[in-house]
Length: 288
Image (tube, rainbow, N blue to C red):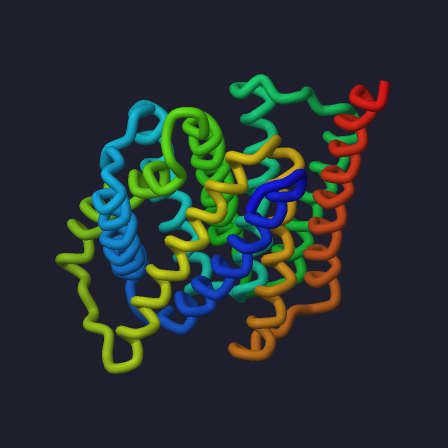
């Protein structure tokens, strides 16, 4: 998949697969968080590691510093996100975690030399945060604790995405992804050994689906971040908030208040507007 819109296309594909994986996690919400992360990571590690060995590519990659950062913060981000999915509505957990593009853009501006933001962009990012606070404020199921966990997940994911961009010239996308699982498997596995709850029947199929869908989504996300500027690509993750709301309502009967929905809408509009503004400002010098 190549071309001027390849990064956006990869991001939309990743979003669809991530949403499908999150639906499976929600269905397995009675299992401990560390077990869900472990099961997902084991499946993904086997698939990613097998592919790298088959292709004769280095299993441990080249840019080790940023690959380790990718793995550590990816593990933190996933664990906190899965925990919020288990305890608050899927749509709310998704929109809070989807503040990660904001953190990615801020970090890319600070550490990756990407274009500085204009005052109007800061204002739009502020509106996105207001939208998330509206979700929390008008949904009693979203406590301050779970809001904090969601923001931790978003910030950790932002660091992980920055690390992914730092590796785009040195490592294959699958090689970047595998480091997340190399760290997540031993960390969560050591805890799961003491808290294991055996999946039953069809739950094994859902656990397998989480791993397969997630590795495809991660690879698509990594391809997206290899294509261009984070400020243009990352906001398209917000399509996942819409998908999560539909799934939350139809599959789990999780209804949101009008104000909470307005908060989700405000967040999506603010980040989308920033994307359009960023693309327009990037195109202006080229036109001159």
